[in-house]
Image (cartoon, rainbow, N blue to C red; front, side, top):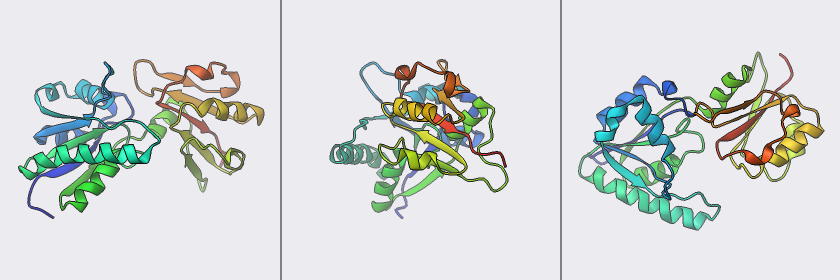
Length: 235
């Protein structure tokens, strides 16, 4: 590893600023720069807003705003990831520590994973600061257990195919990401009369908690930060 700055992946939790860990706040405070994805187009940088609510003084911290669009085109995504890392690397080369903040937990569907690989390939040290993942916070909002005893639980990235097979699995099944696919999943859950709940924008001001999807009809209004939990058999 180079004897230069360290790149930290810092989890800020699913949305409620009170769910950010003390370690995450200390890491952000200690780093010279705070970096995050800026969606542009007058949209708020959600991870930054959550962190700012918990630690208002980050307003004074040097910021690295990154552009990494949400796209299924992997070539375009890799180009933007490389550009984002090049920006960060310039500051790491100067000996500055950089914290990249991300929603939920840094190890689950986070853009930091790609930046971490680029950083390590370039010889920089990276560290990950864990946090509360969205599906755990959603389970708490629904007041349900994800697993008891020897129960399994499964996480799916809103699949296009194989949905019947996934829903037939024993244990708890969690479907996250891909809001355009969620209405189809809800429809299938209703057809099978499964016990399932939904949480959208968990911990945010516009949070939606649906404890029974059998009684929910407004599937088309769900946003990106939505997930479904299909309950498993009682242990």
